[in-house]
Image (cartoon, rainbow, N blue to C red; front, side, top):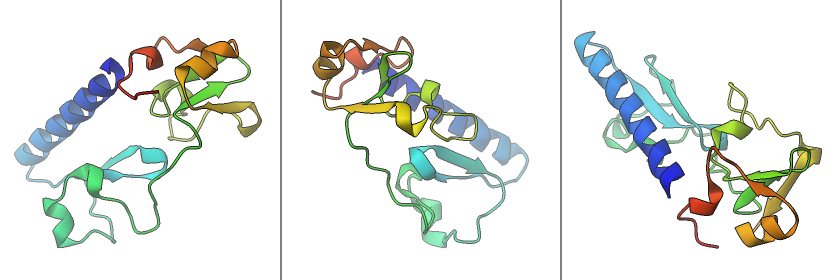
Length: 135
């Protein structure tokens, strides 16, 4: 639970700072969900942006060519370091938002118990054992 609320707090704080900066600079800020459910921010209006999107929550806005990502499990494991994470863990993504774990080293779990029973340990960063995602 802490990791999701922490992530949400960071997103809200970042969004608030950008909004405040944009207000003082008389600029607009555009925020939406991009590939892999990563928030995207820009001060340049995307060509696909509609007026309706100005009133929407950023979590509801997606570019026309980006579908919501669904995962084959609730937790993602790294076969090399034997750790498992929440799919939203920033530790498993590169700086450009791509999955850092190579495809051949990914394993998906439906529960924390499943991951632990196979010898995986919980990530210290996203703390999947404390998440509110019920097993």
